[in-house]
Length: 254
Ligand code: SAM
Image 1 (cartoon, rainbow, N blue to C red):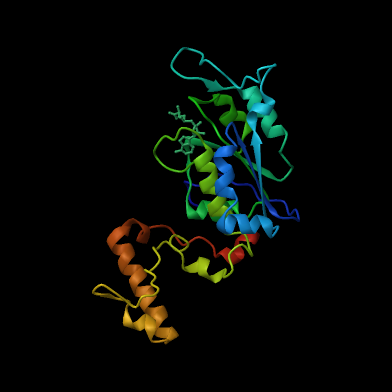
Image 2 (spheres, protein in one colour):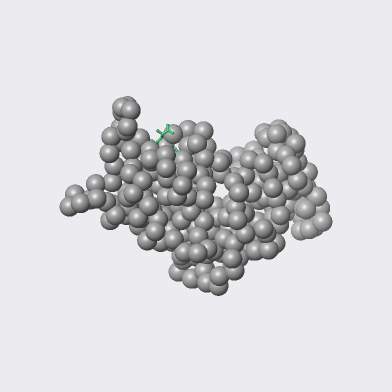
């Protein structure tokens, strides 16, 4: 396993669809994204379930308070550990992997997406405001996940990125599972450029080899184009450790 990846325990085999529960103070931020395109279709087909849960339902008292001022001073409000604990407890199953969205977390990547897709149940906890009480990361979740070195206003976009990237790896979600093997980052390479009609746009032609119908030549061209693109734009990928396991094998992954 890549040293930068989070420790992800072996998933117990639980039949049923792949499920993600997103815990957030702003479920409406996620609703639109989840209902459309491949993610929406996967849910309607029963391959993927996504639950949106308002953390405020577990807030304290009549006003459903979810945050408080930081100990030691400083700006902003901090989400309370007891409130987040109750929100997690309401959805946690024996096979859950609970991840806090956090800028300080492990950097999300395609290889982590493959590992997460081997689980049956993800719980993604979204922080907001100044962040989440440090005891959540230390004692309540299985890991923390960042989608990059920048600060978002809340974890919702991070949870959606992870849900989208993982759900499309669930068997059956994409029509052609083999297309996954050629995608950028599945191997430590960028995918070769793809083209469609018109054959000629302004002075730019689609490469002739792609129009010839010779599958061996097309495969060779794509391999070469992928290598050249990677060398030009992301040479760091070519020095990367061995490719992550094939998507076909991910259910057996530890
Ligand atoms: N004060 C925090 C810090 O400097 O690390 C940032 C808090 S941020 C404004 C609020 C929430 O957005 C975080 O608790 C986290 O859930 C989410 N968030 C922000 N940036 C993120 C990132 N790059 N990846 C994942 N989640 C992020």
